[in-house]
View 1 (spheres, one colour):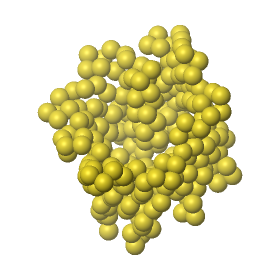
View 2 (cartoon, helix red, strand yellow):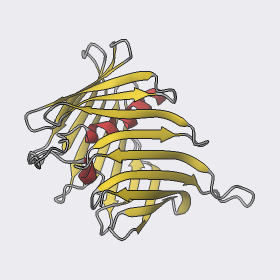
View 3 (tube, one colour):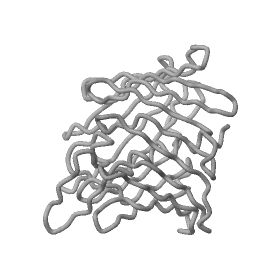
Length: 265
């Protein structure tokens, strides 16, 4: 179950990044109507070149460290706002893995390669897009080109993902499924995660603050009992991108995330 949830989290990050992408050419290339850049997906303002994001624990015990690092993420974008590389570091600031993004001649993402600290292969993901540039399938393979997992997506009329299905290697069995509901501003307001084998269902509800950023998140089990309640507060730079996010659980501060943002201009 734990490994499946890790897979779920990894794919959530990737699916948003696999929509139609355009590399910078001599003349600007018009984006398709459903295609969104990673700048837009991450609600970034301005031409962001890179983000260095550090997540700190916040302990309440008197003798505990106040600034222990939980992890660090480094993200690099191209000049059109699409991911080039994403690196994940552990609590000791040691690289765990990196993701490199490869595009075809039309600027569509076709492959995400994963490497370790020694730049050795850890596997890769192939993305299949529809005519609107929306990701409809993702195949995770090992370094020997063997399939490890299959993921398929469906979208609503606004081009927002409405369902993600996790299938067995032969695609015959449904393992997990996520469904999504949005408000009239296309903000995600509810997601439901269902794990088939153990019949486990988790529902999560979201609210947003004035900048369109997540302000609360509550998760419920199958019986409707609250299993997690998070609150978010932000500080912003001059471009109105957040550079500090405080994460509280049931009103108690648990994490602080700080960002260093570099712009192309």
